[in-house]
Image 1 (cartoon, rainbow, N blue to C red):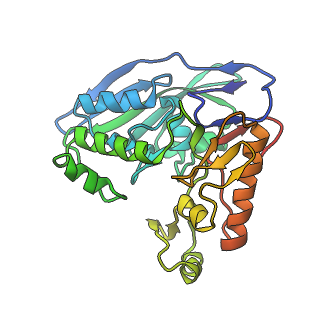
Image 2 (cartoon, rainbow, N blue to C red):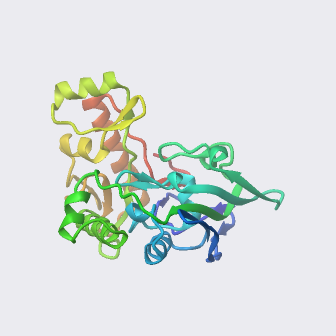
Image 3 (cartoon, rainbow, N blue to C red):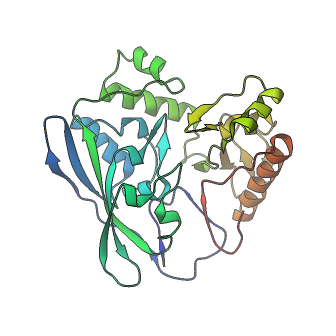
Length: 294
């Protein structure tokens, strides 16, 4: 069996020989409300951005930086989706799922989900074993905005200052200015995760490119994968009917009629080129399903 959310982060390289499941659980409810925060339960089939909009409309803070991310709620804890300095795991308090084999229902606390950068227990011990049914989020009724990532602060100020509505508008505007419209140019969004490297590796990168940007990640350093791909001369690179997007090097696009094999070939070429020039091995964020892997 294969559980398919919105399909925005999946590359099929061959037909799937089995049962494909898709959640129709689209409930949204408030479980607990105090003076400071609220806990909400969202069904796995809820479109992620619909959840973010609902939270903003109701004055619930915490997910606004994750605006305009495609996919469904059920996928959010698997990948621990993140953007603009925020990760879903910061707000998740519980994940509910059904065991594939037994049909029994279970719940995991945030700690039990073992969240990491684009990582969770659902990609390891529970990979292929859990059907996520709903996710509980704790959200702030007095939001503390996170605006120090990229151009967010400037965009928010241009809209009149920090508020849930303005942060959402700013994030949505920034994303749409950088990422291709999926209805016009087929893509899966960010194709690679940002590499997290040791300080020594980052220092080595600085000898090549002194202006290499970075973000703290515990005792290691996160480097933007798109920036590395760009500096390796691959922005806009075309291979057959597939290409590295001309405006955002982190995105691989289908120029029209590209096969899965062409996307895989391009991804491999990007990984090889970046490794040869930096010593860093990029890891695909897209889930590849089928006989041919990246």
